[in-house]
Length: 246
Image 1 (cartoon, rainbow, N blue to C red):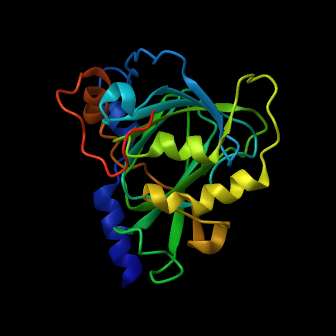
Image 2: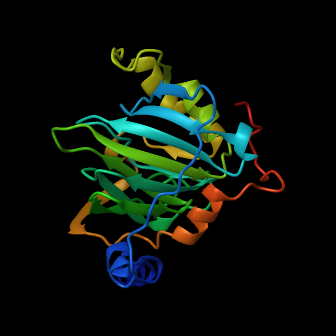
């Protein structure tokens, strides 16, 4: 019964972006965004090299945006954002996104501890895909190819997202010569997460009961909302729990 209800929920929540695109005249064109001066580069504990091109300081908290290189084998294991929604734009595809089917509405609801674990559904991205990950759902991604691929992140609002990566990542000045990812940063990735409204698992099966290998349909990408977010100057700052420190 639970699985049947979950399947119904997924059917309501999920929509195929590719199927929808077939009904439109042209594919989604990612809007031009003028980068902030001196974008910050951070090597994330999961192996992503982020360039934070927009932060709360210039978006009035409404969003943060990072362009990232994802090398072979990199990507964060399952986690939940409670303060932000997230978009993923895949200019060259090649990355597998995974999304759960249950909702965890509070940081105190921890899968495998006082809430049920979840099943991950997989989506193998193709060039130009835009996928949406709403807050409260377990998700992650990984690059299981032999090549580096690229991914643009948009978090809305920037409720501590950039500050979190600044605290747990390694600041980079020379992208051509990256240091090894330190064990200290990997630990901070987990231990500091809850301060920023994130539950980050420390090993894959901590939150996960299994993986559905049948490719999932992506959630409705909310492209109109994304376009408006990236092309409109906000009149007032977004309300956030974590003060802007960018």
